[in-house]
Length: 162
Image 1 (cartoon, rainbow, N blue to C red):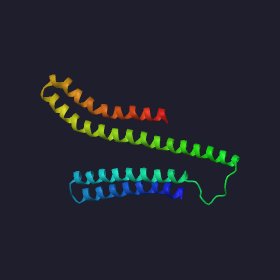
Image 2 (image 1 turned 180 degrees about the vertical axis):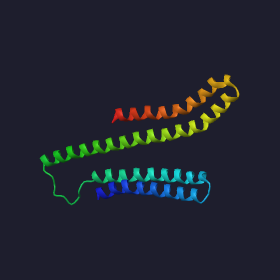
Image 3 (image 1 turned 45 degrees about the vertical axis):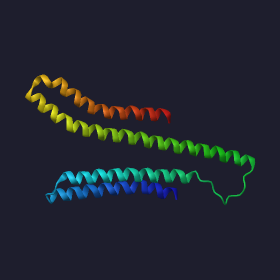
Image 4 (image 1 turned 180 degrees about the horizontal axis):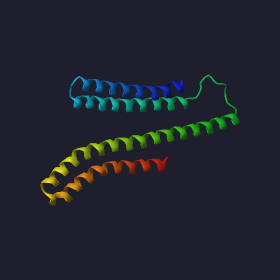
């Protein structure tokens, strides 16, 4: 059952991203607005992130469920079973930490890209009209980049804790 969740965690997001890219391309070829299609793609991407998290959590939760129908443990096998469960708990915590670090870095990068995409053209336009405004414009572009850097710092902190 574990392998089913892992397979779903890989296949469903890949298929969803491929379908959303296909529909975006199709709408663009029909002459429709790309902005609406990009909003749909962003919504699909966020839904897929949630689905991957749920599938990964279900797979890690199922691997830690003890078998109720198993024979009663002796003291030696109980200690070995407890050690195995501790290792599985550490392993699932490590996996969730890596997933969290990846999400933090990815979402911060997307946010920083959106901020720079809005700020950089405005900074270029302001600089072309008045060259003295270059320093002020550069600050706004740097603020957008700092969002991505904050995400990287947080993911490094998460990875050091795991």
